[in-house]
Image (cartoon, rainbow, N blue to C red; front, side):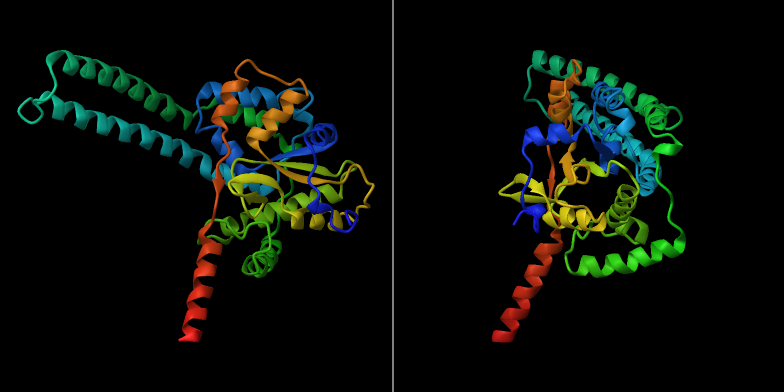
Length: 316
């Protein structure tokens, strides 16, 4: 049965380690943007792992991952600045409320002093962080390293407008049928964002079809159920439909060792690198920062609710 339904037979950890030697490594846009959401030391740790001589030559990026990254990277930095400014605003309100003893006469002088000292220190850190992040909008070592890792030959070709329109039409049908990937994508007015996951899926299929080593590890920053099987909050495996479609598109035989497609989270990817002896002193902290975030879209739930409502109406 495995010959006909390979997607139903997930690989063991040892097999993943072996496939890493032959895999092309593709990072999704959330992995790239997460570098601007985490502590700078953790971001540099992750980038140093990608810069390892055994890994950087395996990297490749679909054009639309690069497109969406450039569209959103400065928005992400600005979002972090807004988060810091929000903390500063709350701290200021808290400090002002406590300093007016008639409004809050419940702390003794010692506690009031300690609180003021701590809030002052946090304010200093936040102001420094806001300045640091503002400079990132103009010059950023993370951007520079990504640019170095993904030079022109490491980025796929752009689709023509006519090709994108065809993909949107195909994607619409697939999304309506809950056919992975992408049907749990964000609701967006811009079709290129709405169908982003399906576009990069098509780009990965096209890339793998023209390579000698046709295996892909797709590293994701979020675990979504239109890419993964998730049961009781635990990530089980890549969706079998994706594996089967990938092998069918490549016309790969069962015993072809170079044709494979698997999704792995960024945390799993770091753990896999450790098994290969690619390590960094900050790696334990990085793995904590990369705790898997399982994203459940409301699409299926809304669909179920609508079906239930229709069924109830038909019985009334």
